[in-house]
Length: 151
Image (cartoon, rainbow, N blue to C red):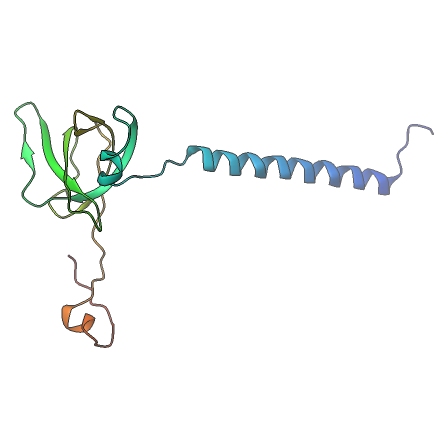
């Protein structure tokens, strides 16, 4: 009976193997989640970065800047969500989401070419405004409650 393994030792071996597999899977999951994430950049950061490199840009569409091109594309200007008022020109060809309009926040993947951010087709995402907004009378020292109005 030399081939028999003590049952308690067999359980310990199984436990070590299961824990090792769990640790390897956890490390792989953490690695892929950090490796796959791209940090979004605002227009002021992109304007001061390397031209030609692909970025995921987030910003606010400047109201009144949206112009349709004859070839199915569009141009518009985007500024930082908060802070800088410097606007960056954007060129985009592709499907435009329904809520896209001036004053809305967007996310767009593309590259800076000759001072214009050229968006990749089908990469435009429009962030919807918050459902809850603070009323002007409440923000000046009221109860701080929120209204359920859109916009």
